[in-house]
Image (tube, rainbow, N blue to C red; front, side):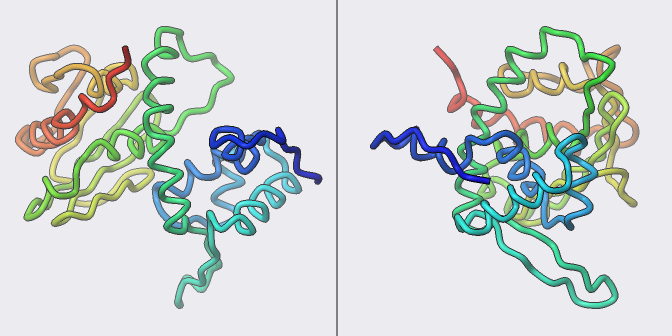
Length: 222
């Protein structure tokens, strides 16, 4: 596949030359929650097609945005992960993704639209300043609509894990529209009642809400 170029000497056009092709940024989104096998990417990006996914991975690898790693036994699998440059790109996607949440979530989800909870959590987790989490150890299991993912904080390290996890400190059951509101206004998961249900200790959920909203002013749009 020949890569197209805008042929403009501009930072935005150069960025789009690299990652403006369809599906490319969604591959980056998938790797924001950690290393993934090819089969994991193919499963999450339903509709991309095998040859197109292989092409997108090849381009991202050649551009230095992702790299291949081999997991040790017993997994012994090849996985793809973001490079430092790829993580910079992921960080740049956060305001765009939250802008999309803000404006798109007025529309109901269509029956043919796939959804995974980790897609929301990886962008919301990026709002948390690791410096605020030193000494914090907590795992919150989220169940959003018909999907699940967990957000874990361990002494400055923040991780999103797809699906259900064992031994979560608390479980938050809500919908994506309510969760997205965290980026733009204070939300108390206990007080909302009908829209948010907390199963277990509410303190970890309150702590996480505080961490998510502490620096949201950087995402205000005029």
